[in-house]
Image 1: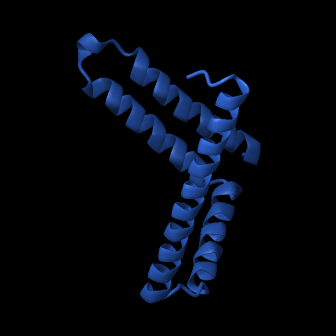
Image 2 (image 1 turned 180 degrees about the vertical axis):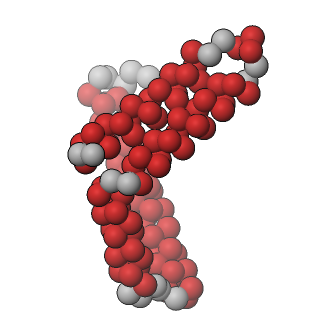
Length: 116
């Protein structure tokens, strides 16, 4: 089976499961729509698992995990120090913008003749 056919089939099966979930009448209960959705999604997953895209996805996640192992994570002390610096800068910038806002408000009030 062609790769595109496998991927389209998986997408159509998943879509049919969602449609079945919403189109099965509620007076039959919630069991049948849920079973239809689960069955269709399981079939879609099985079809997708046989495709080359699934194999490529598995390879991608393995390589991503290997790269994640190479990351040098900061220590707790470094994280706390960086967080403190960022919070201090946020406070300084907030105060600066508040003062600019007050100054601009005073200028606008003066330009409008002291209205407000």
